[in-house]
Length: 111
Image (cartoon, rainbow, N blue to C red; front, side, top):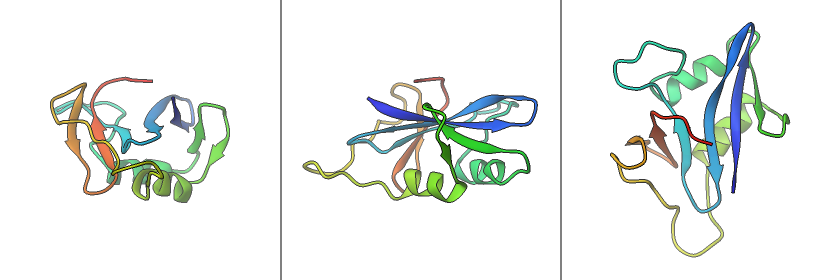
């Protein structure tokens, strides 16, 4: 189990930011290569969207999350279990890259 996060914007459908799952790096949803859509290409693009007027972040339980909190959820992950956080291999399950921190990037929809 994990927690999904969404960006709500004025008069647009919510975007799935990604998922936080225990023991794993954050699964960040990004645009497909060459895709012209609503999803950004990486974390910097998400940061810009979070700070756009009228935008708000909520988790799947509709609890509000500030941009600073979302940043920490993605970039300051740790695991109290044994070993390090698990990563998804690039090219597997929609993973298109690994961030330079505690997140992997996925160009597919997931929950």
